[in-house]
Amino acid sequence: MDYAVRAMDNRGSIRAFAAVTTQLAGQAAKLHRCSPTSSAALGRSLTAASLMGLMLKSQNNRLTLQIVGGGPIGGIVAAANARGEVKGYVHAPQADLPLKAPGKLDVGGLVGKDGYLTVIKDLGLKEPYIGKVELVSGEIGEDMAAYFTYSEQIPTAVALGVLVDTDLSVRSAGGYIIQLMPDVSDGEADKLQERLMGVKPVSAMIDEGYSPESILEYVLQDSSLKFLESQSLKFNCDCSKERLEKVLISLGKEELRNMLEKEGQAELVCHFCNSRYLFKADQLEKLINMQI
Ligand SMILES: [Zn+2]
Picture 1 (cartoon, rainbow, N blue to C red):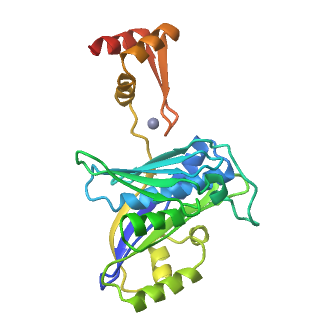
Picture 2 (picture 1 turned 45 degrees about the horizontal axis):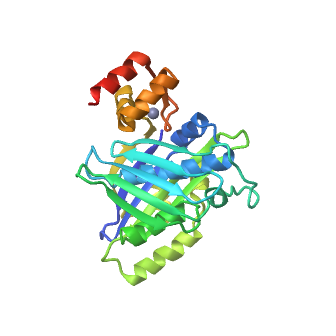
Picture 3 (picture 1 turned 90 degrees about the horizontal axis):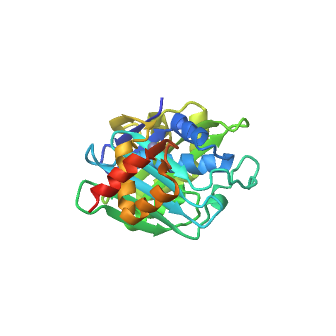
């Protein structure tokens, strides 16, 4: 069962999030027929989106992460809402690279670091909030940490991990985010930084059976940690024929007329879940006539 938690230490100086995402990362990798390295890249991105979903204030809020680094994967999109529904895809799921060390997938190489991480938050306002940072390594965890530190001005540590098994299935996936609040002392911050350098990889923790709660207890070594919220997570796409109809309408009358003449129909595929939506000639005509 995938879920995420939000926690705080008793002084209110550290805010922390952790998630186990093994099932949803595995489901996404299978759905998109990902190579081992692209499974890891997509799984890490979905985990980051899941964790950020817990930071959203209202049930209708949603966020999208876009990572484009110039590497063979082409680009990654991951989206989540405050209800724990997560979806995502990569541009070239079959792209892969040799291991960079025994057992170490070269996610940074596959993603590339010549580009940006963009976070788009739909908070129900007129305009979405958009934050953008240059990629640090393309390993995604470090890039997310840079986003929080520079774009949101909150000193943040991020760990994201996906363990891919020899049969290419996802064996474990998850991550954590630790944020320092303004009143944290330098001593506390240094102690935490030292601690984080010594902990084992998060995918190994989850492979050993750690829950989101025990990940944070182990990483922070703080028995006063208060768990404030828990949210179940699942891979779920909210696409519908109505939504794709809007995409078609946005193409404009000319383009629709072109499609009708050339193809006699239009077939749209949802990037997030590969669902196919067929619009037949009469439906296309209706859409064309709707636009004056
Ligand atoms: Zn879909």
